[in-house]
Amino acid sequence: MFYHFLFPLNDLFGVFNVFRYITFRCVGAIVTSFLLVVFLTPWFIRRLRQYKIGQVIREDGPESHFSKEGVPTMGGAMIIGVMVLTTLLWVNLVNIYVWILLAVALWFAAIGSYDDFRKIKKNNSKGLSARWKLCLQIIGGTIAAVFIYNISDLGGQLSLPFFKDFRPDLGSGYILFALLVIVGSSNAVNLTDGLDGLATGPTVTSSAVYLVFSYLAGHALLSSYLQIPYVAGAGEVAIFCGAMVGASLGFLWFNTFPAQIFMGDTGSLALGASIGTVAIIIKQEILLALVGGIFVMEALSVIMQVGFFKVSGGKRIFLMAPFHHHYEKKGWHEPKIVVRFWIVSIILGLSALATLKLR
Ligand code: 57M
Image (cartoon, rainbow, N blue to C red; front, side, top):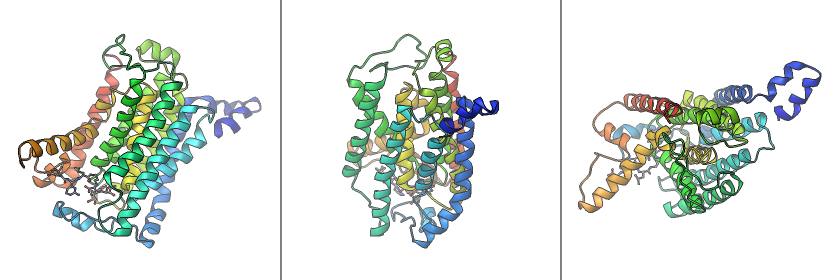
């Protein structure tokens, strides 16, 4: 909105010219969403307490989690609400990618909210059935994947980190691949969100790294210099990423140990799907395995654990999956696990940025 209302005023006052620049609007989006979340969340927590929207804790989990019973949940509504508002304030609203991203974030947040509500209403940890959840995710993911595939000049091409010229073309099979990335990313963040700040921290680093990649992908000169795919209009995606960085960072203020609020599936499903969709739009899908390495590792730990459990007739690789539970069972304190996962996430993010020069 600022872009449409304030930038035209540069004819009268030159200073309004800054609203043209993506860099300025990115910083604006980060600061706006951070401040909105930091100032609104205490009020939101009071409302959640008032309406008794609190976490129901699984009985089969680590004992250290029992004290978390009743912690206000569905904080994702605040993250996603602020992200949407901030994006609308700072982007060029003519950009189609931004609308796809907003639709994905809202659709996945709606699935998560329904799931969270059911858990709270029934007062048990079973929300929407896994099958229904997946069905709804596939519907949203497919629509987004088809749209992006049809809009993109690059069609079904994949871009691989470290390879500047090798870009395999999946043709229309790309739609299935994109769907897997969006739904996989959504579920991986959801699985990671099991300790205070554990999913929020890597969400900040992942969205910050994708902010840089989106900016570069949308810049004709820089993308050609760095030999990454040029995606016209991707610069505005960087502003969406900025809103995600700021809102997640603001939420981390309250979600860090000891958490005053959880994001719920409302937040985890939507943030994961948003990151996956950004990766698809800017053609840095494979890089997501590195940028979101923590999420990938957590999801893999579950797949390995369940797979091994079945083939071995009841044996386990980890003391408990997802991976973070393994360290809890080993007796590590929660903040120690979380901060170490953050450190790994930062290193992975920096490695992803380093691939820009290694191709
Ligand atoms: C949901 N949700 C948290 C909170 C958060 C297939 C199986 C591996 C699935 C997996 C699972 O259900 N994972 C996804 C994880 C829950 O958090 C809520 O859910 C939202 C995210 N979706 O925002 O609203 C609990 O996590 C804790 N928490 C915090 N701080 C936070 O900031 O402490 C969350 C956010 C909260 C709170 O305690 O209640 C969750 O873990 O339930 N299942 C599992 O993770 C289970 N693992 C398992 O069964 N493993 C087996 C399998 C793989 C063979 C094994 O290893 O043998 C464990 N989950 C729990 N306890 N809680 C089992 C034990």
